[in-house]
Image (cartoon, rainbow, N blue to C red; front, side, top):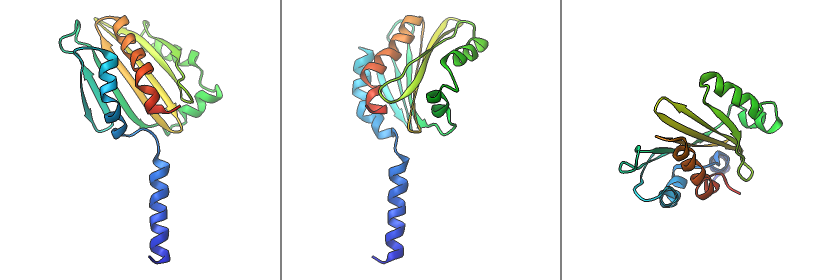
Length: 166
C-alpha cells in the first residue's frame, strides 16, 4: 500500500475512533436488559438511534424511549463547569410547565439531569446524560408520575451504565 493510501486509511480510522459514544448496536445489546428492567408486558423496537419500549397491556399503557446521539452544543462543558446549573434548568423547566422539577442525575463519569412533570392526564420523566460528546436520553410517559419516573430510574440502574460507560 502506497503512502497516500496508508494516510487515507489512517484518517478513516481516526474518524471512526473519534466518533465514539453509544451507537445503535449498543441499544441492541441492552434490549433484553431494558425489557427485563421494566417488567412483564414490555416490548421493544429499535430504529436508528432509538429504542421504543411500550407496554400495551399495562395500566395506562406506559411508553419509554431510549435515544442516543451526539451533544456538540457545549451543554456538557457548561454543566461540568457550573456555568449551567441544575437550578437554572429547573427554573427553565418550571417556566414551561409549573409541575416540572429537575434534579441532578450524574452516572459514572456522565453528567446529567432528570426531570419529572405532568401534562394533563399524562406524567413524564426525562433523563439526559452527557459524556465526552455522547448524549443518552431516557424518556418515559405514563398515567402516573410514579410509573414515569420509576421507569427512568429502572433504566438508569440496569441499562444506562452500559451506554455511558463507567
